[in-house]
Image (cartoon, rainbow, N blue to C red; front, side):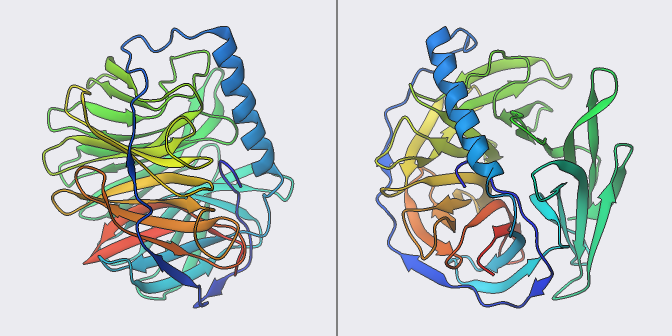
Length: 368
């Protein structure tokens, strides 16, 4: 599992997963790469390198698209495990986004694949409050769902391009007044995807390469768009190698904070990359986190006024090949604690949200 892994399996609830506590692996200050308002201008040689890396990571993911279940963990503010479940339907479910309803149900949206990695459909999984009943619902090409969550609403379905062909699953969350809080899109191949948050003035901040930018760049992009989707600014905090922003959130002042992967900076094969900017995209903080192996971030959420929880996977620490990895950082990206979760196989987190006095993380596991 280099970039992503696909999940499948039977329902397994209440299994015991090993948790490893470690010292924070010394996040180091990162020398920023080119920050460009015209990031589409790249050389043909650099484009070729980025594509080769992306296709190599996708091929590795295709080889591991079985034996995975959806992984669900609740932790307290110090990372101590409060709840743990592993669920599936016997097919490959790829969990992407999670939310909690007013009644305490957990809602997970994602994609389903067959054993060979062929896209089948997208799904919503509903898990009752506590260790309640698990219900999977498929959403077809015409599918659309609306669920009340966190005093707001979540919509999920498929977006369309060209001659009406469904290309990617999306999920949108609104507040009680109907204002968008975040937007998540994700597809079935080498799609670029993005995760968005909405600012107070109605603009939205996106992590990931803008869909209008071709050829594929592979940079660490943070993009601000106006209410109608017009790009206000584009910033690339990547370096000369492959870098990618996978998720973005905001602090109590509304400043965006993004998390993802860097091969350009840090001390490992890949490192978690944290970047926080002001409202104009100017860098406030940038740090790498990780050890000697592969360390990757796929999700981030605010934890109080200034801290953040970053979730992903690591081969540098833990018991397995890839272990699910959660890190708490302060406003400057300095590591406060770092923990791995999982067993002897591959485990990863793809989403994290605040829940009650702690956090809910979801992802994949083939350890249990």
